Amino acid sequence: MKIQCTTEIEMKDGQVAINIQIPADKFLRLAEELRSGKKVAVKTTVKETVEDKKKRLYGLIKSFQTTHPTLYPRGLYTAFMLYWGETSKGGQTIRFEKEQYFDIAKRLLTFKNNYKEDELSKLWDEHNKQAGPADGRLF
Image (cartoon, rainbow, N blue to C red; front, side, top):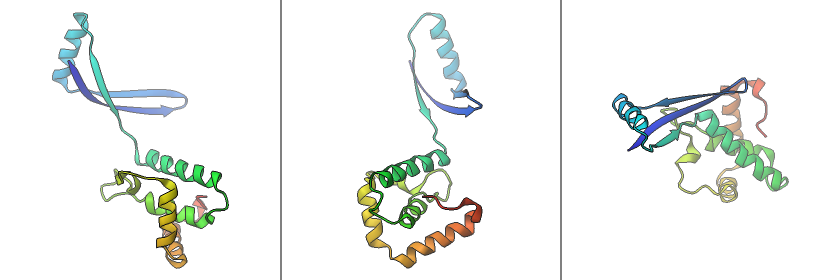
């Protein structure tokens, strides 16, 4: 028997909390099969929060910036993060994960070529209005 379930993993104070959601009817069958000694395969899907997705994007950008420190100005990386880290209307996905392929080097080059300096500063200004001055620079 194969069961597809949702797993949520949360880290707090060095402790890991795992919440596994299985439909009730499948749980009862799972319990019966475990008691009878059968092997059971459970396929889980870990839900990644929007903040986790943004941290993953930030890590990609930061890694590229560290490898190529003088290739682009800091403001471009920040504007890139703000653009590709934009949350969907539903609030569950961010722009970069909707792309089938996401090569950070190619995306940054295209981003630089498509946006003029004044458009980049507009993105930055919008970020400051939403986030406030306490957030400071992203990069």
